[in-house]
Amino acid sequence: MYSVIPDKQKQELKDICEITDKSVSLSKTKESTSYFAFHSLGLNPRLWQHTLWNALDYSAKRIACVTSRQIGKSTSVAIYALKVAAYNLRPKGFNKKTHVGIISATDEQSKKIMLEIRRLIHMGDENVSKRTSGKIEKFYTKMIDSSQAASNNKTAITFKNGNQIICLPPTPRIRGYSFSYVFVDEAAFIIDDNVFFEYIEPTTANTDGIIVLTSTPNGQQGWFFDLFDPENKREHNEYKRFWIHYTSVEDEDFQKSMHSKKKTYLETGREKEWEQEYDALFTSQTTAFFENEDVDKGISPEIMRLDSYKGECDMGVDFGMVHSKTVITISAMIENKSTLIYDYEYKNTDETLLEDLDVLCSKFNVQRIVCDDCPEGHYIIQELIRKGKNVTKMNFRSEKITKYMAFRKALKQEKIKYYKNTQLTAQLKSLQQIEGPTSTKIEKPSGGRDDYPDSFLLSCYHLIEEEDDFDTAIVLARKRNPVEFGLYQSDEWKMWNKLQGGKE
Image (tube, rainbow, N blue to C red; front, side, top):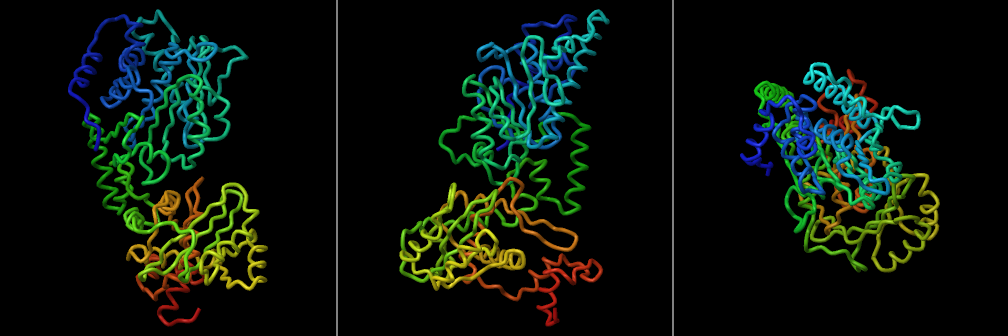
């Protein structure tokens, strides 16, 4: 699973760091990033960094790298970006310049990487000055274009040779750039697929540019998980993969620090967080509501998406809002299991929704239409009622916790089944359980979606049982004293109290 670094590369790095020549070879600096890091910047490269840089220096055009935290992932990106821009190592485009784009999961992270690059420039200045006994000062700083016309700020550096390094958050602004290299830092935490495929990837189209994706894992979901393909499900993968564990860092003090940190994580019940952050495993997100294994077991190869169905079934309609889409699902009880038999997502507009619902009701033996009781769906709901449809309105604000808990229990017991649907499974896996001081919330991740799970839940509304389960109630209340924590007003306390025969 984890990448094995050949002994040849270990010896190669050792040889690079043992060169004692006073002068620094320009040709070797351009040829080897490890040589640049050690002799120009005064840094000791880690073996895994040397391996990654070699792939970039000599062959690979697409790289996906998964690593543990705190092993120098962002620093390795910053060092490589500085080298190629300072020495114009991939001149592309009309002006034959090297433009480097570094995309981070947040605006704050992009600025931190730029700060790291500026720190490396100052380190390089000091190292060159030391090696030349003060004869050369501010070697790398003098490479920067200090004119008013040049872009030099918290997110950009422009060199006198016209090359640039630009650090950006994942927004549509990326579309306006054309890069020789694109580094995507913490790629797994950029949830929206469109950001990569519509904004980032096209920036290399006119330059035949190189794309490098680096990240710690973020659950079994999203475009980065699919591209990295940790389970080797894809027959062909254009991305050269590196999977680096913290134990690859050959530093005794670092390993002692990791050992101590691991002990703390395990003692405080944060095993999954440790597995994801430091073992670099694609486990369930630490706040994931559903277990990935349960979601995968829900898929049945015997079930197909149907165009019509004569048996009794229920329809779920989740209405789209500003950052979501309208999704229709239809489910039926088949062999005592709540089974998805139809789904449809409106890509752009749902102007034909009312007409489409009539058509579906003529093809499927729909007993009940269960709708999200929200302002966006008010007109449709009223029209369905006027037409004599049997409509159930679900209030997500008051019913979401209990319904999703019942849904999860049924899924775990394999009483819910569905055909393969990547949108549904990805969104189920990404749902998060968030514990607040007085309540539990089930929410989609930032930038993510929950249209499919919500619609599927609606179509199963009458098919799944809400059992009087003390364990569920205790989990919801998190075994806390409800009066002490002010929980007597919360949904969790009302449920717990009800189960014990109390009055609300």
